[in-house]
Amino acid sequence: MKRLTVTLATALLAISAAAWTPADGLKTRWASDVDPSAPHPEYPRPQMVRADWMNLNGLWDYSITPSEAGYGKPDGQILVPFCAESALSGVGRHVGSANALWYERSFKLPRAWKGKEVLLHFGAVDWKADVWVNGVKVGEHTGGYTPFCFNITSALKRSGKQVVRVRVWDASDEGFQPRGKQIEHTHGIWYTPVTGIWQTVWLEPVGSAHVVSYYPKWDEASGTLSLGIEAEGSFDQARVQLFDGKGLIGDKGASPSGTPLLETAAKDGVCSFEIEKPRLWSPDSPNLYGLRITLLKGGKVVDSVDGYTALRTVSVISDPKPDRNTNSYKRIGLNGQRTFFFGPLDQGWWPDGLYTAPTDEALKFDILKTKQWGWNMIRKHIKVEPARWYWWCDALGVSVWQDMPCIADHSSKTNAYRKPEIAAMQSNEWQRDSFIGGTDCTVPQEWKDNYYKEWGEIISFLKGFQCITVWVPFNEAWGQFDTPEVVRFTREQDPSRLVNEASGGNYAFAGDIIDTHHYASPAMNNFEASFINVLGEYGGLGYPVPGHLWKQDGSWGYGKVFESGRQLQAMYERFADMLKVFISTGCAAAVYTQTTDVEIEVNGIMTYDREIVKMDEQRLRETNLSVIRAL
Image 1 (cartoon, rainbow, N blue to C red):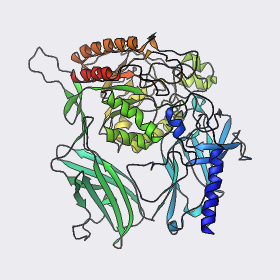
Image 2 (image 1 turned 120 degrees about the vertical axis):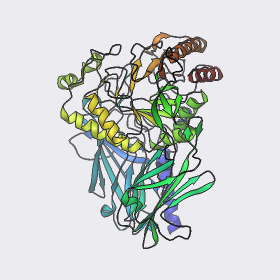
Image 3 (image 1 turned 30 degrees about the horizontal axis):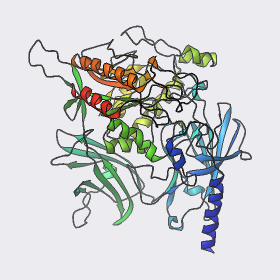
């Protein structure tokens, strides 16, 4: 009977999956690899791995209703974790602020989970999620970019089918929440709205005592790795083990004989290791250390997680000054060494999945290409990625400058569509070529409070990934407010990284970096010698490749739109030669727009579907390496 039940369930799942087809639109090569019975099957949290878990990605029932209405008859099925507007969801429908998006599916718990507490995890849901299990509301969450979970143990039935239901509402640019490049009336640099679940949904069983998170910090001066640990529940001891490529190199909490030594590493909050001959992390040498954190009670293991970290520092350092006639500029120091950071503006959009890459291999692809093209950094622009994206950056060796998704913009074209009160709070003056003249948005306290909540959650989620070297709270004055206070808040959340307070203008001189934007050619129109000076955006050279366009009409790029890859490459190399001159006069980093085309923007190194690299890749690599080495 058991075999028959499993076979029948598998058959029903296969029938349901066979009914799924992507909506129309431009596709990537990975679209054909999407398995509707198990999309994104990889473990979603590489920094804290438990052996036992259940992936809930796949086909869920969905409906779109007026926002005040309850859940009714399903409209059909949606493929999680792809948003409703995307082709890969199988839906391809606009939701909008007047409506709510509902999800529902059932699952059965393994017998081995009996007696365990069960956590229901969401990688990310844009924007407000209310969650029920078996009709019992287990929680709600706001914020479109961070993971969250609920302990659903008390809502579970003893056996049989369990039902989870999710309601999502998202105002996009008609509200106050961080939403990045999403906008209702798409045009230019503003893209299709994303509504609903867009990262993996999953279950895991835990004991009543379990690790919640940990935060590593490397002190190069003392050669000490400190590990802050957060745990829940009652336990007697915590054991922390550290591994390098050759095996175990540190063990705190237990002697070699297994006798507990450390009373409560987690409750004390910090466990430290002195490391001889540390292997530091850098883009040229992305060394990682393995971690295992174990909680014990009565001598028995009640929880164990595997993770990793890396050892690296980021700082402000100055050029050497051999004589009084030599200028000394502020530079970014990686592990105490002056480093010129050079890389693409990477927006992380996909023609078939929008916010969600079709597969993990696709997610890795853009990072791998960045490395192959000789760049050493990525500016993650106005978006936060899934944990696995940052894991790939850690593992492959790419530095990341992390933007905060904006809460507004100052475009008169888009404000014309908005309610007058919303438009008024999103409007301000952006001064990109001067230190004076820029103004803040007049956002109310509710907007500010939510910004701090979500920015704090984003930093908390990401600060364990050592690839991240710079935080970027504001871009081009979009929703910018109280910049000195935002910088102070950012440093308070994480003092170990640099803060690029205002990429592109409206400087408050409160952070570490002065960041100029200039299209299409590179130029440093703002310079302040007491800060690190960078070119945070330039380029955007357009080349539309027929057969690989989001739309046939309206494609554009900054400056001239080229007719061939040869023309594009010649201009790119000319710009690189200009950059080398700027490096000698104080430019400490540069960001080229951009990795791929995005919707009607055709200024990527690759087409939106990632099929065509528009330049000769070896020449591109040699050019980029020559810029980095110019320092």
